Every structure is written in C-alpha cells, then in structure tokens.
Length: 119
Image (cartoon, rainbow, N blue to C red; front, side, top):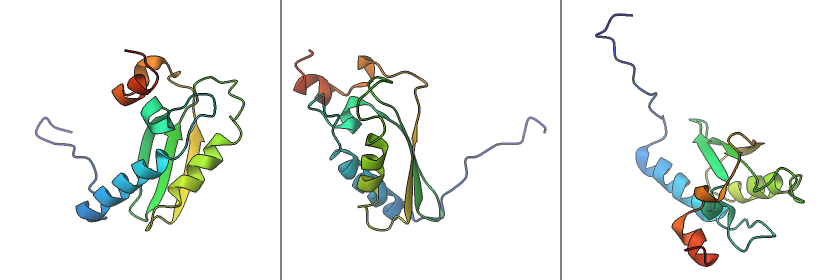
C-alpha cells in the first residue's frame, strides 16, 4: 500500500436518519435496565462499552458489570437483549459480556454521579 492510499471506515447501508433513530431508541431502552444494587441505569453507569448495528439491522452490544461476581451476572445480559429488542426495526440482539477493561467509577456519566451524590 502506498502513502496515498486512504483507508475509510465502511459506510452503513442504513440511511443516516434511520441509524440515528435506532441509536437514540436503543439508548432509551438501555436506560430502562438498572443494576439492582445501584439506583442508576446501566447506560449512565458506563456498563455499555460498544453498540454495533449491522446493515441487516442486527445489534451487537458489548457490556460489562460493576463487578465480576455481580449476583445478576447471568441475568443482566438477557435484560439488555430484551430491552434492545423493544426497538422497532431491529431484527436481533446479541449481548456479549466482557470484563476488559474492568469497570470503575470513572466510567459513570455526570448524571450517574449526581444521582449517587458523588460530586
């Protein structure tokens, strides 16, 4: 490859307006899932690491938990999948649980910090 070759990220076949709507609707749905031990939704807690919507409208979500020994570790990915499937237009949802990088409080949004009086 010569220096003049430019690598561009793949463009989505989904129209931008629809992709924006799907993304916004996914965020709304992810905010309905709460860690049972912390009164803040998983999106604001920073537990969602990656969301990828394919051209076929399948979504893959990479997420973590506040701790590997979380008592709902076996259930929470199902809750997230079920929430994602509420978004009109998505065909399927897959949730991958990862602990790399490990979650810490710095991943929380300002909104989450405010809800937990951590300022």
